[in-house]
Image (cartoon, rainbow, N blue to C red; front, side):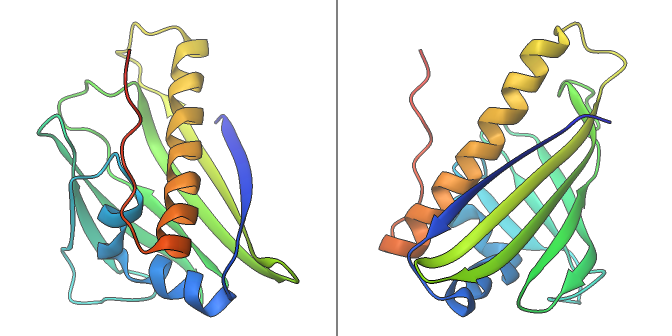
Length: 156
């Protein structure tokens, strides 16, 4: 299972970053790849909390928290694309927060497998994963520091 990691420092206290990340519906504000996020579980925090993310292409995925460290991070696992169109499956994201003198260091690790049906070369699938990872971290930083929603990058 390939995984990619990156990190960014957000000029805000860890509690402010956690307040954003721990509200699963807020993803639509910092992840420009999500049009709408909403809970599909009665549980709002902790293991078992789940959301649906509606994507710009009209598809959606569901994500469920599988590990939770209150105030410090969590792991979330995505359901596979039922259409089989997305080249990455068995997706798992880990967020880890750490207070620093400059704010909060956010580490994000994105793990995945390649969909068996994909014709996309693995190098292109990995580039797509890196774009998602960096987009989420950049959007989170932007949203926490400015309060303004992330904007999807322009495509050529």
